[in-house]
Amino acid sequence: MVEGVVPDDDRPLRARSGLLSDERLLPPEVRWFVPGRLPKEVRAGRPHRTRTDEYYLPSLARDFALKRRGGALVERKWLVEPPHPVLVDGRPALAERWLKERRAASIGPGDLAYWQPVRKSLWQVGDVQLAEVVLDDAPWWTLAVRCADDRFPPLPRRLSKPLGRAEALSCSYSGWMLERRHP
Image (cartoon, rainbow, N blue to C red; front, top):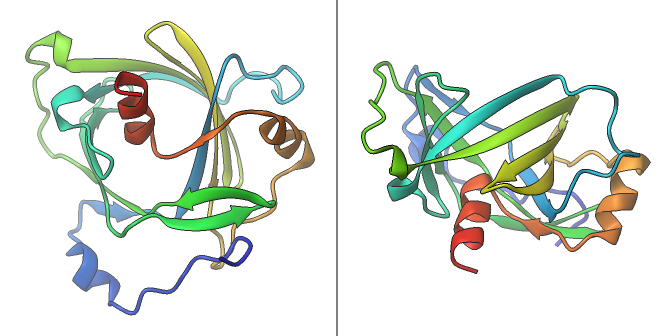
């Protein structure tokens, strides 16, 4: 494992994903979830945006999820390659690469008990996203870093310090929700 480097995959991207015009392949990303409120010293003013995303519980898997972003059209997400262990600022994490597809048609809510709301307050600076999230009235915070030029950028000190002190879980939103439901 090399600090911040994403392993190569020899297969052509289109062969792995079957890209269609309404799909978006995201760069590799690492994400950590930390229980509790976002430390005040980490916040950079007011959030850039707030929203409630709803995840369709019957679809949740470590490599797949259906969600409604802020009440909009349903988005289908799936992992296109196995997670890769990496080190970001010396901290172990799993790099994941997701493909997102926004559906042209909306899926009706059906039984509301099948949709899990997650409230999010989001800050975005370059390839780093910071969020305070609430699931089942429990506060958590999450830090995500997207790969740029085949490397993960170093974390700003104000973010790496509190993350280093925390008991963090490295996974996607769907993995985090599954872990919370079935620890």
